[in-house]
Amino acid sequence: MHRRPLTGKPLFPGLGKAYTLGGFSVPSEWRDYGSRETLRLEASDTWQEFMRLYRTFVKEVCAPLCGAERLVFQCPPTMRIALPGCPATIQAHCDSEYPAHWHGEVNFWLPVTPVFGTNSLWLESEPEKGDFHPAELGFGEVLCFNGFQCRHYTCKNETDSTRVSFDWRAIPEDILRLVLACESTFPFHSGTAPLPR
Image 1 (tube, rainbow, N blue to C red):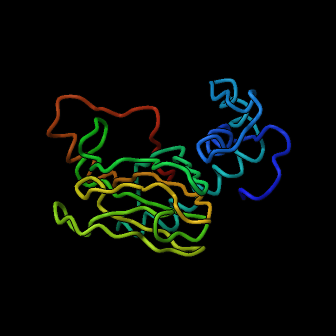
Image 2 (image 1 turned 90 degrees about the vertical axis):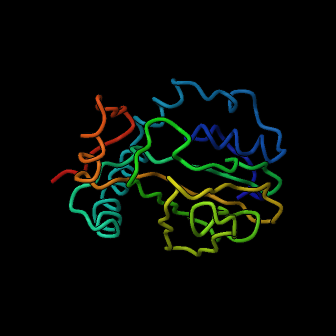
């Protein structure tokens, strides 16, 4: 990806940012990440098809992995691009450190490029174990893990390989209802969507 010549403003605003973080010079209009660019992306046929496929993937793959018929899930997923030389995209953390996350959430990480070493996601196998290791996945593999309690992070990409990945969180609807029954408010935010029946 990083060896291809840059032609035309990318549809995905984050691509310009990824090239900049990777040390590449990009036209100034590529560095505009505002709502106008997001609206341009979301109005495109390409994005609409991607979101249709994403919802199908969550329903047909993620829901069975969670043992649930209905999930509440992050929508849209977060797309991350890390070119060689790119700094870490996330620092070590547990999702429980942030608001709008709940016990019972499952993290999904779907790289669309081979990931290994410093171009991968690093995580511990159990909460507080500290045995960090890179997830090594190939095309067509998805990682699901307990990011609510287990720390995870990325490193500076010191490989010669670009990482392109999507990540999101999901929680079975019945578990979320139990969690919310213990709270006084229903903290849904606009970035979640229940699976259609």
